[in-house]
Length: 104
Image (cartoon, rainbow, N blue to C red):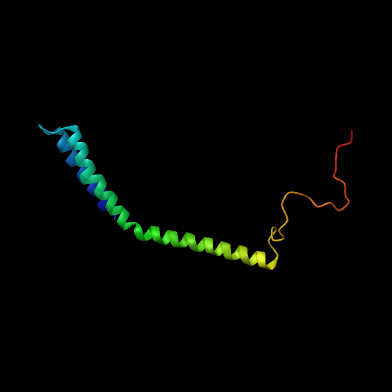
């Protein structure tokens, strides 16, 4: 697949060089030739040919997110999640033990 793309870009670049070096050719004409005959068709073909791979990656990413959400929900339901109790994080519970401080 990539060999065809490389060959097409090569042919389009040679067309652009021929346009630029022709007696009545211009650099602007060469640039337009390369973009319209080279880059746009190659970009379109690659976009269409890589579509199934993009869809597979999207489905795989959605499946991983769904699995992670399912695991989190199961952990919360079983009481193993650290934040399942609903208490705000950050405050340590006081059990009558004073915090350790430096002596003056």
